[in-house]
Image (cartoon, rainbow, N blue to C red):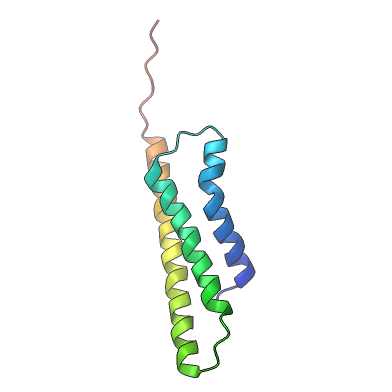
Length: 99
């Protein structure tokens, strides 16, 4: 199963990444940073699936499967959002100076 403390910290960091970007003065484009924040929600969902007190074996296997699926969706969203923003930062045209 997924490590809970590390996943919880990753979720909080992904959720506050747009805030830190805005506080740093970076002009945020909405979509990539929203995708990173959404990955934080998926990581929180993973932790929630891991701590549910369920006793029935069938339900435990279903919850574990859903936790793993949400964990991988979170990682995919985090990587796509990070790569998307990286491409946008690297391809921004330089502002022409008027002299």
